[in-house]
Image (cartoon, rainbow, N blue to C red; front, side, top):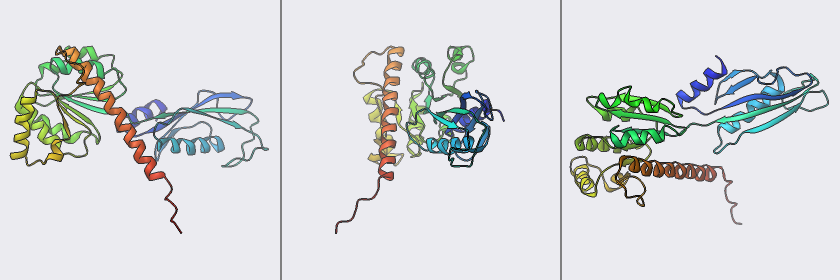
Length: 287
């Protein structure tokens, strides 16, 4: 498997990894500058020459895989018998610099309803590094020519045509996926909200609409759906930034996208807090 294929595989499987590249070589070394290695949690693909250089790079890459907010970094190796190495001696005589670039798992977003607002939102989100799911029961709004505006997307775009039960897509989404519900049909919206609330592993849940619509939904979710107040509080409605009041599709889309990016930051901050709490040493017992 080539390194390009390995990176694509990690992205498709939503697994973190690190791309390791021989950045510079002075003198003799096992591989030339540009050689690459991809490191996942358990597997590796490619090689930067084996020996101590590769083993140390893999060790460090595995540390970066498990870290939040990991940054690219350089490692330098002197390849001579006077240097004590962690994984044996390499005495080629040169000096090698290796670049480690983390490949994090990107956020995932599912937009249910690709009408006027949904398409404008997709155009904005497609410019972000994320997995973007577009779901609609109407074939015509998912037509190739209509979605051509997403042709240069940075995001990985996944299109789901669901003529019967759009809510079934919810069960296929990866844990942590943020869900935005904005279909053309209030009954479809209600079914999606009900189904989303039954999947605690999902990320945030947003619903477009008025306070009157939400009031009716809450009554139905409580009396017919059996959801308690804590579950219903998972739904944010109206969606978007409250400071932006415009109702044009593009304006709403900008507002929703900005609020979603803020949600990504809050989620990352909470993950960091939890990680730090778990890694902190226990407090010493008092005598």
